[in-house]
Image (cartoon, rainbow, N blue to C red):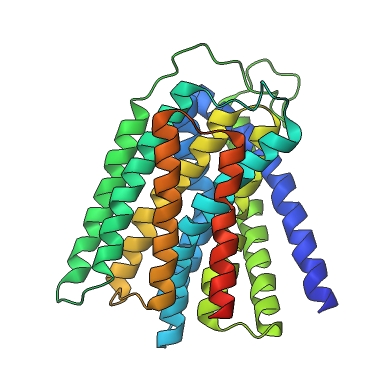
Length: 328
């Protein structure tokens, strides 16, 4: 138990430190390729940090020979969006409340509209995926490419986005602190090296959480819904903390919304290909809580009334779901 806790802490600290290098590198990558802040956060950062959870889902589905192992893969695919929609946005709100003054907490109206559009996209895709999980029919696996196609359409839309105002240069590249505009080679080296460290540390973090789940007597499905998603979403959560602390709310929010779009498409495509994709009671409850959280987020962002406090309150939905799941 002591070794598990020690490795748990070491991996968490490693993820945070590696993410410092990753977000710094990914900002410069977006600058070199002339991407908007929204595209940098929702595409580059989200794709990089979403790799661990996609790998966890795919590994569980491909290597699993039993129903329980398949349920772990499905639970991970459902738990990721739940964690991002609740803890992810809740972390943004809480960090703004704790680390920023009253004026710095305000979320720009243009940013709110952008994130609101992302929530609308996610809600539509997730509703379709949830509905498919309620019915059994032959040929369901043929729908998997459609989810991948939807993500490509989303990518195309994000690449067309542009910043409506001049954006400041990122902080100096950590591998080249004295360079005004660091060369692309060093930018990519730092970004990819940090991403590798994040992925390895995230895998170690997942294993320690799974061990803790076994020690506490949690079933595989509970571990998949409660522990594994929190572990695999650690890179996104760390990115959020770093960017919000730097006052870059747009990048933080875009990272979460972009990761949610990946989670609603790619892992769902894996599940449709390799499982019957039928949701039991706990999985359906997870989906409903996710939709409730996204519905509240979409309403607030669309109206332009989302505040740091309201974002923080969304995180309580995850705690309520965990409590219900453990009791039931």
